[in-house]
Length: 95
Image 1 (cartoon, rainbow, N blue to C red):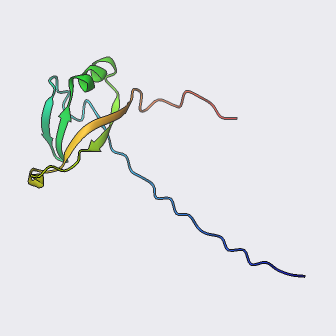
Image 2 (cartoon, one colour; image 1 turned 180 degrees about the vertical axis):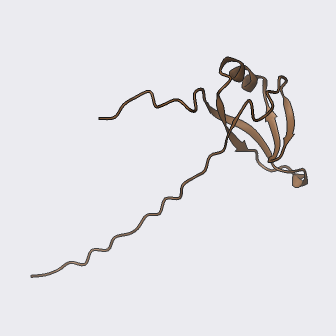
Image 3 (cartoon, helix red, strand yellow; image 1 turned 135 degrees about the vertical axis):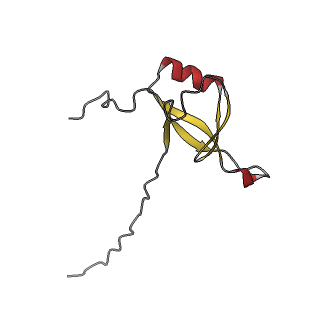
């Protein structure tokens, strides 16, 4: 009886941590602009504020902006995708 050697390649998947930020965490700012926080500079647009006005509990993904020539002033961030009900259960069930 012949035995074939089977090699299994392990695939490692690193978990990616995605930082989310809420309107409360940024002090419920009311004007678009560039704000300094403990984690760096955050640019908030009028569109971001409109989403927070409609969905005050929405949580945005915090995205790092590409570095500028003067990166000494700290990291630059902007808001990405958002979840309007971050603490709500999923809207579907699995069977």
